Image 1 (cartoon, one colour):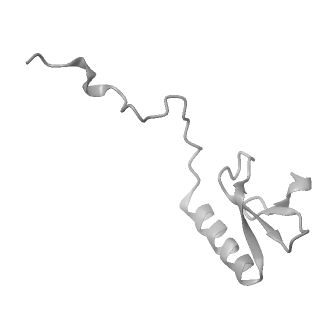
Image 2 (image 1 turned 120 degrees about the vertical axis):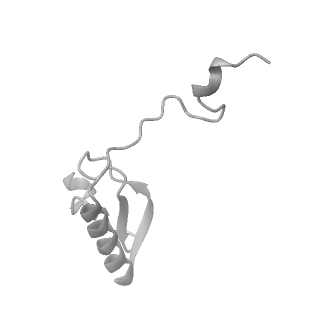
Length: 82
């Protein structure tokens, strides 16, 4: 059998246009995790949405109560302040 040049080819299920978010430092990830934990204990809700700011891409947004504004623990801003 002849050797194939496809050894370096992407798997069929790979997303060719995917660009991973920039890496954040371990300390910023730890700080965001700690802040999320504190807010969860205080009754805040973790949302299925993430902050879009370049400083904290991927940090989940949170909300206090049903009518509360969305808040990012990474940049410590409410959505209308971003």
